[in-house]
Amino acid sequence: MLIACVGALAALGFQEASAAPEVQANKPAAGSNEPCAASGLANKPWLTLSEARCLMVALVNRDRATMGLPPVELDLGPSTIAGQRHAEDMASHGYLGHWGTDGSTPEQRYNQAGGADMVLENASCLTDEAPRPVDPTPKIAASQVALAESMFFNEVPPNDGHRKNILRRFHKRLGVGVAQFVPASNEIAVPCFSQEFIDAYGSYAPIPATIAVGQSIHVEGMLTAPAHVAGVGLARVPLPAPVSVPELNRRRSYPVPPPYQMYWPPGYVTPVPLRIQGEGFAIDVPVSDRGQPGLYELSIWAKLPGEADFVIVSLRTMRAE
Image (spheres, rainbow, N blue to C red):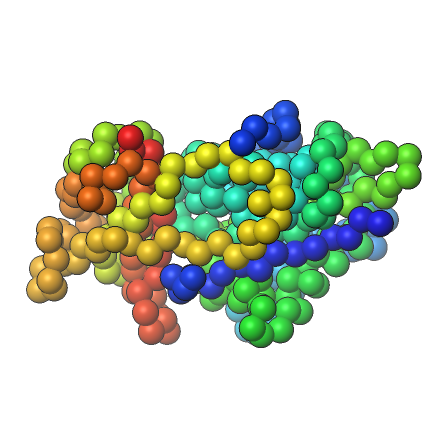
């Protein structure tokens, strides 16, 4: 019997080899924010991929409204493209987690799809580790969409990372990945979901996808209200490498890597001062954590109303060897 499971998402608090053939993602139509006509979808027995995404967003906004939070908009751009890639990866290999079989992380997939903001992911899938083809035109049960959101939202402390993610006040957009395998004659198809919550509070000059260790990069951008720029950080994790499906099922929460170096405006102790003019900022920084290769992560930190601590509003990756 196949059981849909959910993985725990770590809070943004710094606490914490060859794969089966890659499945071509069911790419959503290009676009940015998209209004959803979700009325009546919960009462339909079967949904298309587009309808399943709309219903998921409607359910998320219903749950956010219970806490007086503003709605998020469906983003059919980078977040849904990245989420669809991950949902299909999970469905085709039978695992649940935030790493991909290629070793990718949520922010890396979002960056590769063209995103530059902060992304926080919820994921739901089966965990039987059986390879199966992904159905390119699935019929998704509306009840399964509702079940996934219910499992996320009704978590209880201390294992309530998905719920906390749904209820982060400053989320603005949501990308939704939906994938379902082609079942064998003795199986029932189970959909896999990813929710990619986006904190979009600025525009940023491009950075290189690959660099040499020690190379300096120019970082520049402009934040929008109510965010006010606070600092720039650099973190490093090992270079991505393929991960076995059993190992992916052992991993659950995904901790955002803590910076090894922060850069602050003048007046703070900082190796290089961050130049700020209005809500615009710029800095040139060397990319080197003691000369080590890795996947370097550039974070933009901001002050948001009501938040006691600075928060990340942009997280981008660079491969350095």
